[in-house]
Length: 362
Image (cartoon, rainbow, N blue to C red):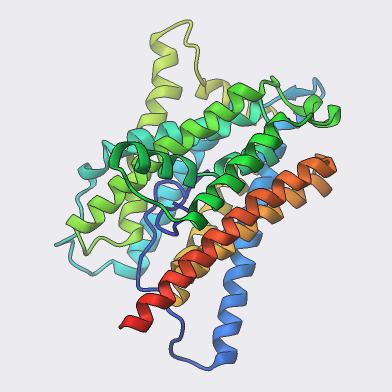
């Protein structure tokens, strides 16, 4: 789910590198028109991804059918997302760039390697919902700055400013305290296999794989500058579909005791419970539509605006999960949530300040 470097505004959903134009503080059109477009983008991103989060949580916690069975094959969501986003990107390419030359654009085979990590990473993030709650998963996946700064300090000797360390301290402290605080029994009962250490480990591995995926996508984009976001979305999801199809449909035929996700069982479950099939379809559609709004936001207002919108969306997803989906948070847990998003807000402010400094020098 996919997918999506959100913190930097450079990554995307399902292995999509978002367009990275210069952040704009102004632009053509009237102020009222720009405000209307911005409101449209905010509404689109919030509605698509908040509803996708609700569907993701529903599929991971709800019991379906007369036998009250869980949908155990959460990795199937990643496969379905690959298929829908592949078809979506193919349609968009035909609609918007069907007659353009392929010269200067990355060939499809360039994506086969990076698609491996883009297949494994999101699957780990989705599987984490078997072990931790959706709010916990959102918080854990919001802490991408932690491994980035850690790797930068340890491996490359990068020096960070005090405000940057403060951001990291707030995010790390918020996630850690949330993980250590007692989760309500009502929330625990909804989980398939409550296991907080395993759930958080899967989330952080998801971040590590995403970091490699995003940096490799940036490299492809720099080497093939005419490659557009739909080209990358197509290539990543083509190979993701192939890899997931092999893992979920071919491997179970070759190994009788295949221990991982079984696509045949997932399809059978959807046939027995059509509600699940529709939820999966809407989940995938939300990811594809949401990506459209992200592209529009970055192209019209820049990556900093997009980062702000997606960060506030994550906070609202936690609120929705707590209030609507019945995952009550204690006052101390809400304090942890505020710590994390305070750190992210300071990070956004620091980026805005650097941007203004560059513009002033120019």
